[in-house]
Length: 227
Image (cartoon, rainbow, N blue to C red; front, side, top):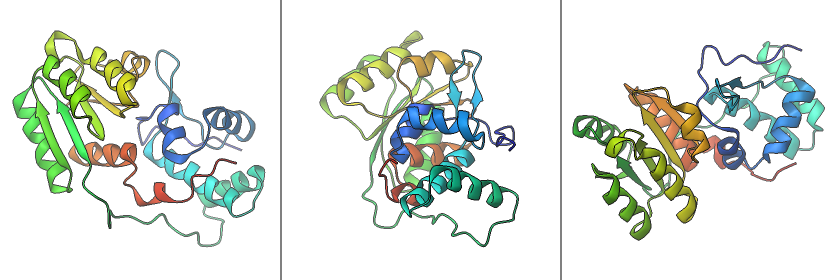
């Protein structure tokens, strides 16, 4: 069976981020990829697996089928049928943020204009946003007032963003979305970031990525029991 390509939906999420979002151990994700060849993530230049949002949706579908009693092989077979339009109508993942308490997003950004841009779209979606334009201030806030998620420009403070990724991970395993005008994907993931976006940011992709990492996407709230 042919693998699912991420060409039209670029890879954003590390395997660790997907494992956490869906409650599926990373070894299981790798085993499914090798065994069934249905959800095959892209690879970065450094060999890191990068899952697209569509592929997270596909894995969510597989997880739900397994939790309803199917064997992994049957769940992947059903996914293949679904991808080719042969399956009976499948329930689409619900959308929306009903009943979600506004999580705090800390934006550590070197560019005030870019910070205001992100702030506007995130507040429109109901998030509580804090902005810092200094790496030291961001590190202090991570320690004293940990946010639900950190968005960090890797070039803040002359390149202190990678250190902030490590700090967020070490203090409280805070999910990190790294952004940069320079392609620093492998460095970001190695430093503990769970996703990377290249600037200039697309507002819809920014919001959807943050929503997924925090767990606000309704389809990620479905059962998280690992098979």
